[in-house]
Image 1 (spheres, rainbow, N blue to C red):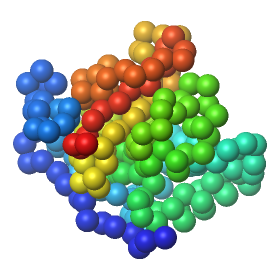
Image 2 (image 1 turned 180 degrees about the vertical axis):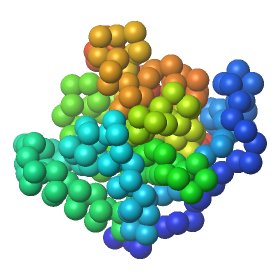
Image 3 (image 1 turned 135 degrees about the horizontal axis):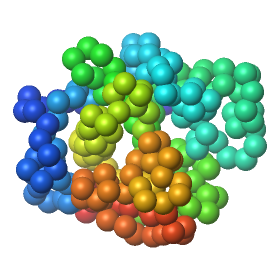
Length: 229
């Protein structure tokens, strides 16, 4: 396992603009670049306390239940059966991943304040996707998966998830990723409450993602070509 990389912090000095006026196309890909107000940085052990701040905030009870490990394991093991031991073990497992490369996700900062988290990485790192009826692989192409977003209640409806997604796209591009994949929820569906974790379909569409599969009426699989190839 390679040492942790912190080579890709980035931010934009321009203020966030509405999607119709704040999106720029990048040559050679389908990426629509958003003018960002957050700084988005990879999780490292040095930033572990910032992640704890996010997960321990109001509105993040579900995140504290699995510590973003649920989709990284397959079957019904000690990291998937709800219990105090499971929550503690999941937290420890994610902290171990914070020392790995690629990191298990990115933290968004407003100034020095951590305001959100996005979990992403190579699809093969998320073992549960292989057998998921909704999120199983569409093909054998190498992709990175955007799994979920965690934004405390006090920072919601402020565009934080959109900026985290934009940061994830930028980070993936800098890592040489060609395809980025996600599994959002249609906002007008009965399961729209899940959109706060998986992201809404509209948010991904505005970022340039295109639907490539749909195994359930309210759950598309979407992709974005990040790099050339």
